[in-house]
Length: 66
Length: 259
Image (cartoon, rainbow over all chains, first blue to last red; front, side):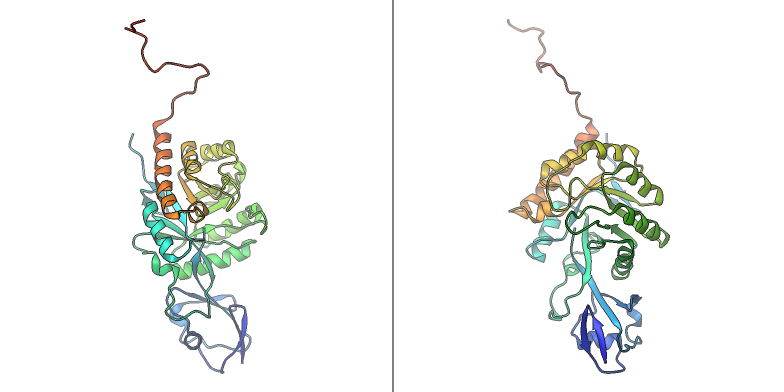
């Protein structure tokens, strides 16, 4: 199925969780926050939060800024 | 007279310098500049993580000890209140803190604050329980409105972001300082050490800068210069400068002169 991850369309298998997605895309769980369809998903829910077709996922972190 | 510490969001700070973490050559340079500047608070931006990077690549947060430094996330890159609120909520989730530097800009060209959207975002964020340090123009009445809403620090620009032009309108800055009962921290436009000193001599409670250090030819030396500049300006403000005079006045007493 298709989802949008940080603005880019990607294809993933059905029935995967946010945590699976992080592992699949090699994203460290440290120092990130996640939004699914504009709603923040707290870290303790990443395992149970399943992804659906056309979900929009944003994985954010802190970068340099003034 | 003994000076008070800067007090922000239930925490006191000895240093009145806040530095940004952008535009450094690498994280090591950011860390060194932070250490030598004496700053106890550092701003960060909230952006998408780089999906392509290696699992073991370092993150900026790996270089800032949260026990030693207060991390101040900003809403840089937001042009309306909705975006700024969204980024603030993400920052709160990421850093587990309600402190935010609210920055809502007018356009990409001038990078000047959008006054209406800043006000709207500030109202909503106060309702959501955020402690807001707000980036604003040097508009005196807007600064007063932002304080009334409940912002914990008013942060007027010295001059536009990244220009290094120093303080363009010291009179407005003085009025904002005079009217404000929350800390006033000059944010943006500082170019060199003397600009920071002047801001502090005017009575600002602190200075926030990024490019002035990061874009100096030698950022580490400039970070140290800024530390001293802010201390010098603050001490001069506390000491209350001499009155200026239109006529020369000798420093030596005339009494007992040989001629």
